[in-house]
Every structure is written in structure tokens, then in C-alpha cells.
Image (cartoon, rainbow, N blue to C red):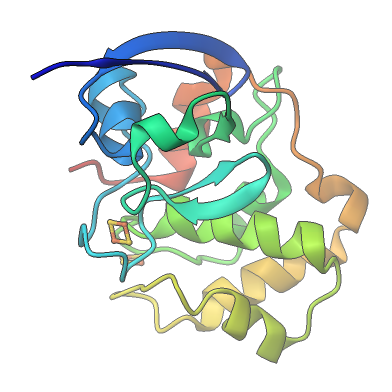
Length: 182
Ligand code: FES
Ligand code: FES
């Protein structure tokens, strides 16, 4: 099959790849770039486990072709911690508030919550539940997830700004955000 050249920036790193036109962004991230913190839970745009940021907005990367991300800035869970390994406030609050059990949904939850807090730094419980309704969790019952997002928001909206990406922080970030890899 013929391929198409795609250029995109992922977690601050520029990549140029030849991809099949049918390749989904989630598979480019996981299979070509090795960023397995972005999970595949359904492949049918239901679960939100594959949520990443594209040009600052949360999207389900199983619904986007890699070629559609040509020229885009992509951020995954591996890019959420700061260069010195300091976790993103949402990663801290998910940890502290026990907002995960198996961890499969967690990267997507955090990416969606970060987008929500960027748009609404002080959301109500209802707004958090509404903002995360595209992300499914089979384990936690959502209560602690909502509490974690509230905790991160209370830490100050300024802390929600996405830190500079750092490849060296990827392992730490993913260890917290994703306890189970497929
Ligand atoms: Fe993308 Fe479930 S894998 S929404
Ligand atoms: Fe298991 Fe959410 S913690 S699916």
C-alpha cells in the first residue's frame, strides 16, 4: 500500500513518518512511537482511553487518522510531567485521591480532565462529570476521579498549565498514570 509522509510534534519532539493513509493516530503513537500510555479500550470512540491533546484540545485518537494530525502538536500522557519529573497536578491528585484501580482508563481521564480544567479552572462536580462523560471507567465508580479533578483544580488553575515535555519524565509519568499496559 502506498504511504503518506506525516510531520507532527509529539510531546515537544518533532517526527516525520511515512504512514499508510488508513493508520489511526492512536496506532501511530503506540506502535510507531512507542507511546503506549495512550490506551485502546474499544476502537469505536466510546471509552476515551485513547484521549490525547491535538493542538491543545482533547480528542479520541482512535477517531483520527494519523494523516489528519499532519502539522499538529500532539500531547500524550507521557508529556504531562515536567522536565524534572514533577508530576502534573492531575497525576498527583489521581495518585493521592485513589482515583484509579486497574489504571486502564487513567491516561485518557487525565488528558480529558486537563482539557476541562484549561477551559474551566473551577468546575462544579456536575461540570466535571459532564466533562468526563466521554471517558469510561469500569473500576472506580467515578467518585474518586471527580474528587481528584476537584483537588487538582483547588491546587490553583495556574498549576494546570501543561509543563514542558521531557522524554526522561515519560517513565515516571506513565508509571503513575497507567499501572497496566495492554
Ligand atoms: Fe478510542 Fe475507546 S479506544 S474511544
Ligand atoms: Fe480501571 Fe478506570 S481504573 S477502568
